[in-house]
Length: 128
Image: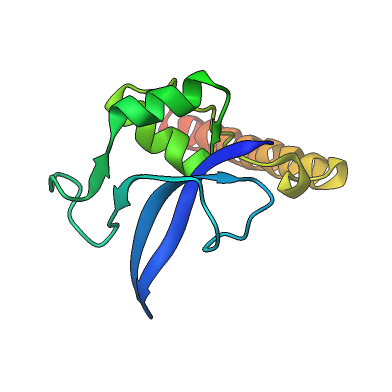
């Protein structure tokens, strides 16, 4: 059984409140879970003590037996020192500019450099 540590949403519309749970990866997001490990309230300020409440001992236990946290929880747990920070990629490959777009950007930069050099040369020539 693949166990994930993930957020289970509660709260009303536009007022999210999450439980941090250990659940089977096949179970629905807000459905059946194995154990509640804490709570997360994103509406509270970053420095508020009730924003993230975690039973660190139980989280360490689940991580020790192979449970994988979601990307958001890995980020939150790394702030508490429970896990290493996940690598966040700046730009996905799918949305990166394609070859022709890169060529156009390079040509535009070269044209801008040439124009800047021409204006600087013109101002130097008129100053003499």
